[in-house]
Amino acid sequence: MKITSMYDVELRGRKVLLRLDINSPIDPQTKRIVNDNRIRKSIPTLEYLVEQNAAVAIIAHQGDTLDYQNLIPLEEHARRLGELLGREVRYVDDVCGPTAQAVASALQPGEFVILGNVRYLTEEVSTFENNVPLEAQEMVNTWIVRGLAPHFDVYINDAFAAAHRNAPSMVAFQELLPSAAGKLFFDEVSALTQVMTNPERPAVFVLGGAKISDAFGMMEQVLGNGSADRILTIGVTGLVFLLADGYELGSKVEEFLKKRNLDVFIEPAKRYLKEYPGRIRYPLDLAYEATDGARAEVSVDEDLPDALFPDIGGRTIAAFKEEIASAGTIFVNGPAGVFEEAKWEVGTRELWRAIADAPGYSVVGGGDSVSATSRFTDPATMSYICTAGGAIVRFLSGKKLPLIAAMEKAYASGR
Image 1 (cartoon, rainbow, N blue to C red):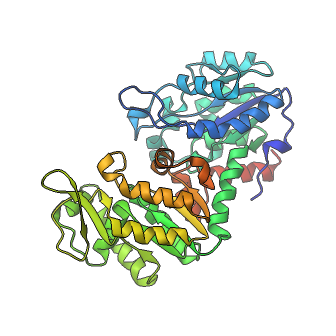
Image 2 (image 1 turned 120 degrees about the horizontal axis):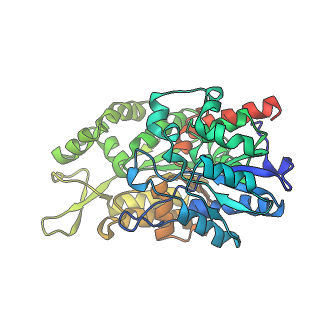
Image 3 (image 1 turned 30 degrees about the vertical axis):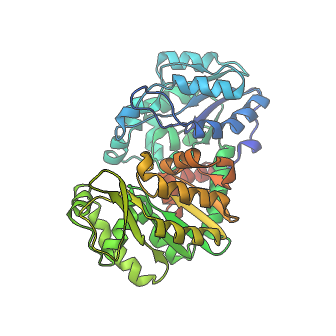
């Protein structure tokens, strides 16, 4: 991967436009940040820019049209960055308009500022990206690029978590400014490359959660190229594989999947079970809510109640923990159930603690997986915690990420 590092660019005293991904989980009632993992992960890059006495304006996003409840200003993000960095990080509630441009123009070496949430701009939201596909060179005419590019000497991207997004703030500044990637970018790529191309054996992937398109997005690739020796399916992914192998899970599960258009994954699951025999494991038992409201467990080989199954059962936990303990590499994306509720946290809690205790190289990715790591373990016990979710899926699926393509193009052009 031919991409310029920020360590290879002259930054001392220069004006730097820094794209971060500090998009954080938000409490729906208070609208406050509840997990600052991505903010913390950005600090080493910022500390280096402090050492270089650079003048830094940060552009970042929070929320999107697809999660509008999280679309809030970045004021708290600026305050948290300032606390962790040990210096003032100003906040300006303007992305690229007159106020932002004036601040950028007047920015002095050693000063840091976060500009407004880029997702307040139409050209930055997912619905625009999906409906108006633009090439990077066409994006130089977007408002954010026209407004900000003239005020900076260097563009640095340290937002690997958004690397799958073909948005102006991610791929267009490289068309105009000398461009480099930050420390976190290379850390993420290095960890995922080790999982994909050089894993210690056996390599065990633990794939779950409710957003099963992520699991299916990478599953065929990692099975086909041999990156994964075994896949342990949990959460909704596990239910889909049970259905694919002929188990009857009842009308409530079927309705749940159909309503969310997740039943379309049953046929691919059947194919994977046939093409990769013995390499995909699904739950042996499931947890459900009994008539008295208590947690109950049932083997998948018994007559199952017509219920939803918000967690895996004890036999599955024990079997999967054995797999995890003997793994040389463990990649995790997606929890075992609705771990936010105490009654259904058991599977996620026990598997995550097993991963933390395992001697193998462990990589955790995806927002819910990271939240579960913080809740049930000491994050320091995991080998690497990725900030990315969708970008992981694309990367491990062998697809070229827009950010990587843009950074390689900048390198090739000498920018």
